[in-house]
Length: 90
Image 1: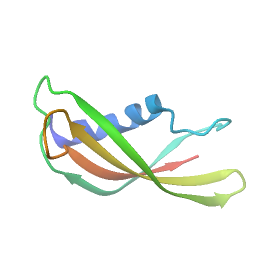
Image 2: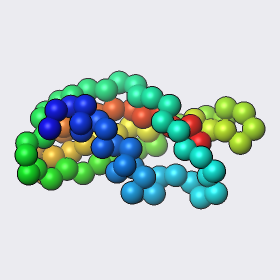
Image 3: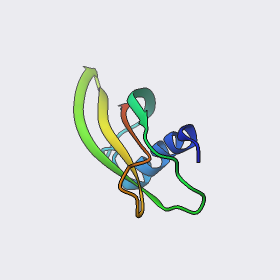
Image 4: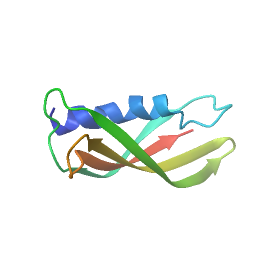
C-alpha cells in the first residue's frame, strides 16, 4: 500500500483502540505533524498501530487538543511503515 493509504488507516485504528476519553461529545481530525513514510506495506502484510500520548492542551471551555505519536508497524519487518504525530480536537 502506498503511504497515504497507510496514513489514512490511523484514524480508524486509533478509534478502535479506544483513545477517546469517556464523555467526549465530538472528535475532529485537526491534522498531522512530522509524517514520515519509511517502508511500503506489501499486499497481505499485517500491520499494527502503536500510539503514545505526547500532550493534551486546553484550548478553551470543554475543548482539548490531543497530540499523539503514531507508529504503523509491519509484522515481521524491522522498519515501520510510517511514523506521524496526529492532532485531534476533542
